[in-house]
Length: 155
Image (cartoon, rainbow, N blue to C red; front, side):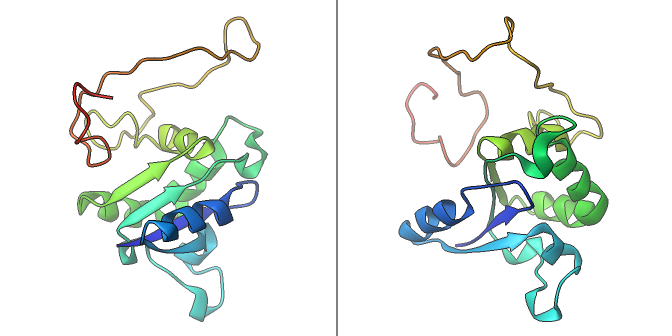
């Protein structure tokens, strides 16, 4: 399996993510978004289709000044939207952690009920009340997913 840890300015934990995936035997490299649309040296150019897994790490992509993950998602749509559509159409894997999850929601890839949405079907908003909250959250596994298929009774 070959993976790319996709990053832009403001993301973080790329090195840790790369090491973790490599530790599990996944051939992984970090790839800046610009490498996917050719704003780099020719020797650094990449294509999403070269990978089996795209991993979007955490952080504060582009400072999260608009909405968390919104700028990263917009840049992906405008610069590599065709690659993303083809990549997902081939049934390949994409994983977003922390800010990466927010990017996937902003892009319209998640929640993924009917494929990729032109407009996001979910919204990430502030807590009510607007303060840090930490509490157990239980989720129910409804859709088939290779990451959770071995779990009994869902996740």
